[in-house]
Image (cartoon, rainbow, N blue to C red; front, top):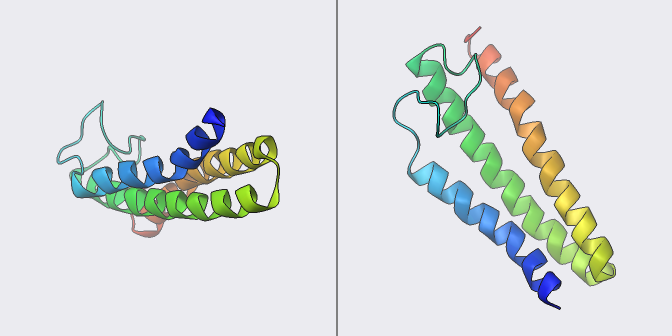
Length: 110
């Protein structure tokens, strides 16, 4: 049962984290906090654009993870539900990277 509570906290926790990142974005290029890739760190404009887009995408993935959690919890055994929703979150977060890079390229940050 404890594992189930932990599972159901994962999506809302990610929503809270994405809200914090959206509310307090990194102001300047730094090696610790923010979306850090070679393309995003080339200029302050690219940095700001990448962090805005990435945070928005992170928020969407987190919200969708909450939906997936509710659906899988109601349709599957607990262990399966945890696997599917955690897998969805991981794939979604990994997908944010190429999406953000494509967005930067489309905006002219090569």
